Image (spheres, rainbow, N blue to C red):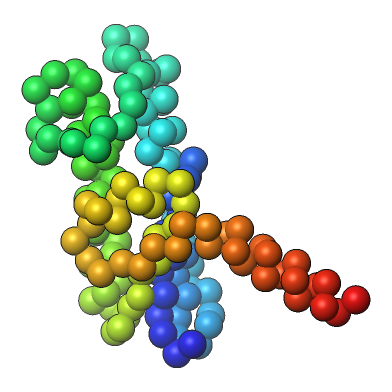
Length: 136
């Protein structure tokens, strides 16, 4: 309550949702998630393999596999840091919450203070279910 919040859900898609201090939805963005980016490069290019993410990503790859891992994973890191830094400058006291299946990887690689709630969507749905159950 009373805080600007950016929720980033890291799943099949990466969704960003901004809510202001008055609990009003300001807007959001959707882009392909990490595994979708890897699969797209493997499926829609003639000579690139489908590779898996890596916990140790180089800044610049020395092999095709490393270049794909670095390009996808570093690209997402820069994408998120760009959004976060822009919004922190615009919304004082912005809180950033990371959730979803890929949250644990990216929280270790982002430079900003971020809260991780791995099952935020499921927890929220459960709260709605419990609330509805209490009404009946």
